[in-house]
Length: 215
Image (cartoon, rainbow, N blue to C red; front, side, top):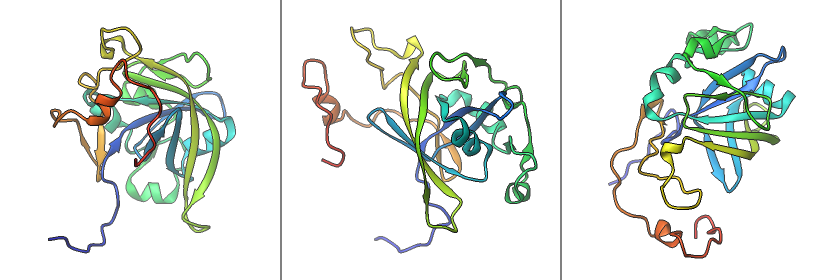
């Protein structure tokens, strides 16, 4: 049996991303988010305009999408109620946010130089995606503070321990343990349920034509 409900949020589980950007004075900012999806080399981010990160992306047009593994949950959680905005937006102040200009230090994370974009990468994250902004579009009409930000990934950095031993740039999905947020709680991955037929179709030696989403 199914039941019709009106949930407070539709947030069924997506990977956590730590977005590093540059503030107006050139200092780095880092913010956690998890409304994100990828399509080929493109990535779409869902954010609120009442954030320093959106201001930075609109002004500078570059970022690094750092993907933390589940063992970094403590560092991510330390960022949860911090904002680079000063003054703190009223709705964030009501939720208990405070202004913190040195977020890397507050979270215990280490900035390292990127190769293509100006914002730094996060050393502790196993995955770094250097990206540029292609466009920002409002979501939900004139009264909504939400935007969808389209980015293009320019360079991918992966910790070597996550790579398969065979030739080629294959990431081992059994070694990658992303941090997941579902309904505002953190989760990791459990054991693999079963092999995917799509993964079998993409095994070495098979055609590499990109599958059509939803096919």
